[in-house]
Length: 211
Image (tube, rainbow, N blue to C red; front, side):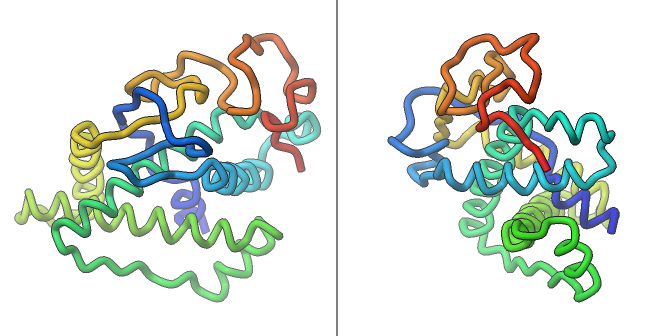
């Protein structure tokens, strides 16, 4: 189950170019394709459920988990997936991902409950992105056969490809043009004010992750 859990947590954040305004209601736009804020919310909810069930200390579960980082991870994950899908289409990759086994599905259902469908969709999306970056690396390095090496090389290639795309991210996510943090809200429903020193349970509901 540990491998599935790693897939759920998504690929490492890539250096994505992000600047300028986005379409109303969109968290980001990639080459004209809109990523809805609701999609970010759905992915962040899955990350929240995974965090709550991932052996978090009891005291932190009671106080809640700050979703700022989860939302930023969600938008980076979705942006990487969108760019990877575009590359796969442009290069005519034939990408298939394995189905979740019955045993893993039962474990996921226990872990995510009502968020199971979202978790399964996220797992499939991240597996697809991983498969695409492996194909990108294999195309450039046909002599390399180690899957882990191909995955790492492919992630670097995807990061380079992303920088060539026309990408905009809503500035209220608190990220600069390379997805580095410059604000601490991570939510469009909360003004960009300093939350440093504010307990998680005292923050707005949009910035909480509780059981």
